[in-house]
Amino acid sequence: MRRTGTRRGLAAPALLALAALTTALLPGTAAAAAPEGHRGAARPAGVWDIWLERPGHAYGGTFALTASGRACGVGQPGSEGFWVRTGAKKGFHYEISAPIPDEQAGTTVVVTLDQEATLSGNTFAGSGTSYVHTQDGQLVAAVPAKITGVRTGVKAKCP
Image (cartoon, rainbow, N blue to C red; front, side, top):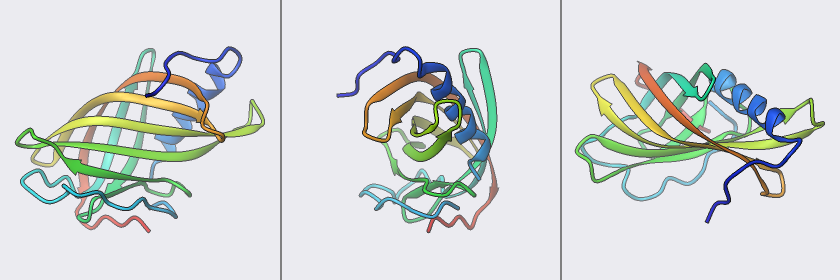
């Protein structure tokens, strides 16, 4: 179970880290094992230009979803994740995590985008939560987020 809320003093830097993740999401250097369920009708595999909106802020970025179910930020070292098809006809779930240096706090945090999305041709719309954790796993912030994406390529790679 994830804790909600923010730790005093780290919330603003953590939200800056969320901004850094979404602006730097461009293939990462690590990838999570793809879980079962990535095959089927909803095929979000490709390279996606995305627009993330959270209360009071909006950011652009790029990420990759591979045909084998991996997900990563393009050009974001250490990012990794997965996507799986959901019960909805064109639905899918994805998570992408990346370590983000937080210069203001003098540390690195891990930002995770956790989204449910619906595919419509070469676009998708999703909503969920963006989580910011310390390196030791302590939750710093949980922020509702909506993401829309436009497929810009079909050959996605996540190392």
